[in-house]
Image (cartoon, rainbow, N blue to C red; front, side, top):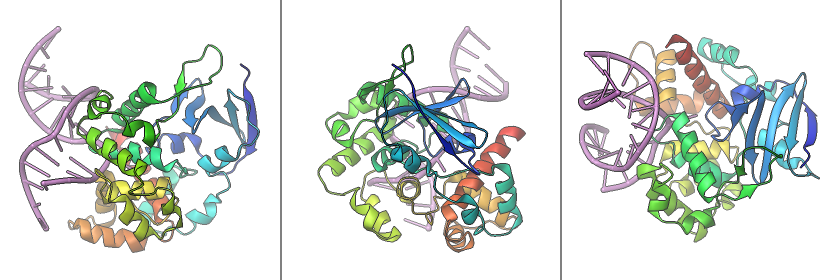
Length: 287
DNA sequence: TCAGACCCTCACAG
DNA sequence: ACTGTGAGGGTCT
């Protein structure tokens, strides 16, 4: 099978930071390429000068799905300009200029982040790999290449058992993923409908799923639906905001939430991702 | 509002 | 090498 290629001019796009930043969990860095699956497409990516190079195993007539997933049409500098001009934010920006937000499939994003609770990113990656390998569909890959799998649909997972999912190392998250899949399939909550809603209303819908609290709901709102104002607060962000913005006294979660809702502007979610990445990188180098 | 439980894996001491 | 311990992009009761 031959490879099918496209090349897209890009600006301000840090592919490494974006794909390794803990918003998606199925990308692997291999031989200078980022290999992964978007929808039903196996694909590998790399930047070459001012271009993004993408290769697929099957012929592609329309690359819209790629542009959409990578948000190639987003003008990053216009977003970054709305960030607060304070020291912590600028330091975060300097650490990973070109970091982007992806636009993921809602179901995949939802299931992934349900599995993220009290897990390290590397462990989340392992769970997703096991899930897709066991219950996803095999996808066309280049000859001689390791097999690739689609993300199992909600329908597929709804028909499994808790034990099936525990077999994918989900632990106590297994019943959550199962219950959520069944709620999606039954139509109890429509993932489609969220696109038309306001942030608060959409969040309310996501909170109906078992295993989904505010943090995970906000991740899905931000990474799958493009609600840029969503600002997921996890232990890392908590630490970051506490240290960087409230160094003197300990602030409550409520206080921090209030602060983040206003301080970071209309694209707070992007700002959050920069802070998160900054903390991770800083932590890695000092430890 | 607040612990404690939840499942499991890995890193790191000792 | 072996066992013990703690914590990991939270949520539920």
